[in-house]
Length: 260
Ligand SMILES: [Zn+2]
View 1 (tube, helix red, strand yellow):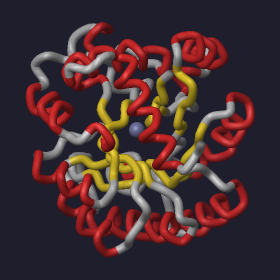
View 2 (tube, protein in one colour):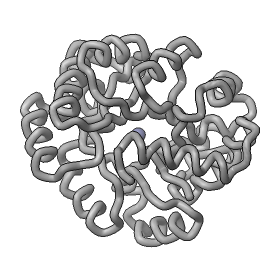
View 3 (cartoon, protein in one colour):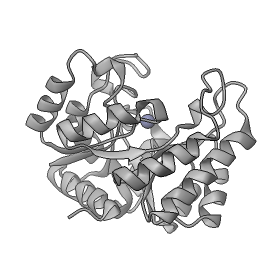
View 4 (spheres, helix red, strand yellow):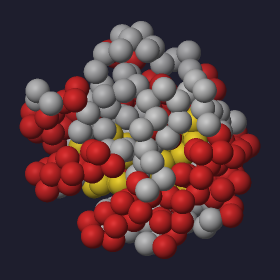
């Protein structure tokens, strides 16, 4: 059985067939999905999704809503997040992080939101789901300053040295669709070399379609139901059986969330 450690099940791409997607995922061997809404306007929907499907759930404000062309988060949203966390007791805080790739990013504003959300994770003793894009060293700097109890560095794409630093801080590195492409040499080398106790699998659905949906960046809708097929391809990269890889990565997520 597999756990999708990073998914956006509330995305409108799933509005037409969300029940079916979840049913297909279960039938394919996905025992749990971590759902991450990413904007306070989507928290209510995520709460409903949690109740309906029993998703693991993270509340947090994604950096793309903090800076760049779609910025619509306000500093007051941090207080709203804190009260949601207090009331709803989510499984983690996320998706939070720094994105120095989005156009016209406001670095100091992103860092403010990120550090405030790390403090919430620390205060409620929750793991975090991290969005790390061209910002590995900045993220590490904040993690060393505000100690949280680990979590996931989603769609990890840093250097081997940066990977080792995340591992030292107790994080799992998330691998998914990108690593299914044979030409993704660097990410596949990381997947091969990271300690197995620090590997999580993820879809980031509806984003990051795997190789069997077409060419890289094809725009095809990814789905948590594809996680077992993605996991099989990643297990090949690690040269272990799919069942051992599923068992190990599932145990890693459960340990990180202290859930059974
Ligand atoms: Zn995501």
